[in-house]
Image (cartoon, rainbow, N blue to C red; front, side, top):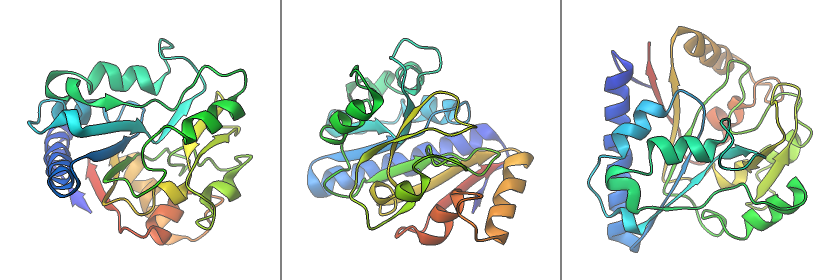
Length: 228
């Protein structure tokens, strides 16, 4: 766990770590991939990362998960990333959204699987959040496809997920597409989230708290970034 005194310090520290990892990937392979999460927690991190100097034209950015809503919907993670990350230096990055304007969410998931980065090889960087119910990505307790989403023997893909706590139907990257990232981060802030994390670490039931899959079974040991 990497602990910071303030959210601003965390945002800058995480931005530096991500920029370093992306630059290293570009130096090695000529390109880099980044998958980020939505919600209110990453806004300051996105703002900080957007100012970091690196060859953003060689970076593909996508989302860990997304509501099945178009870009202009206020609850869209695409809109969040467009507003807070894809500007300044990072305006040159290529953004590949999960949402696709297909007739059904199942068709959108299939289309996205064939387009988004991270389906043929590991992401260079994945940033995960965590809800107070212990979900991460759209791996919600009670999710209709939770077992398949957490099954590492399943192919890397974009999946659908519906759950009582999810609100809209969701598109989410499978755990198999996230677990082996070059840099895997769980970004949380506040005492309530820290208590949820402690509870997750103390137990083993992944259906009850799906974040446990990341903490216990990810091929890449996750770095936990936290500020009170």
